[in-house]
Image 1 (spheres, rainbow, N blue to C red):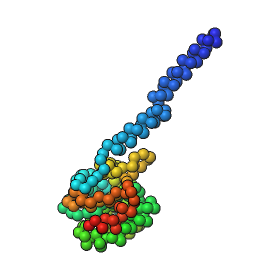
Image 2 (cartoon, rainbow, N blue to C red):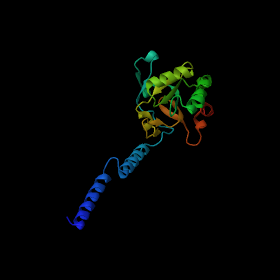
Image 3 (tube, rainbow, N blue to C red):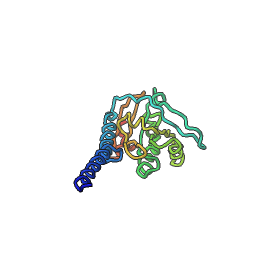
Image 4 (tube, rainbow, N blue to C red):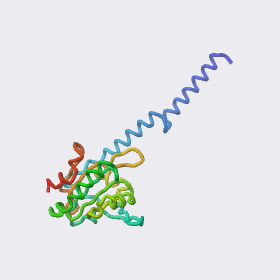
Length: 204
């Protein structure tokens, strides 16, 4: 076979491989497209704001002694009540365990004096982790309810999900809702401390 013919076959083979790679799930182009699609999907929902209605989404509550978690419709749970809801990126993580959660534990009496009937802590960790965190942190004993948003449905509905990785997490936030409607919203966009209990109490 002539050298020119061999070179022609080699070039054709390289071109075919390049074309196949361009559409491969592992190709850089494919990864970039997926990443862009993921970011756009996460950004399509507007961030929760005052006046929004809390959606009817089922969260999970862990039970003692590894009992089967129970399903809790958030909208039904808070109907007719004034509640404080705060979400954290992860149970047992430093900022959440050292600052955010403790601020609401120590503020329970003050929150109740302001008419808050129930405080709810939410994260995308599973219900077993949330139950253990509530029990070992003293949060459950203080009267805080720990709920798992395991599928990140609430986080996404609020436009506050952190997409990517194995576990979709929730951004840090706090809010006050009365009869299922958000009356105060506290974002961590500028400072995490803006979502801690003292900041919430200052607005009540």
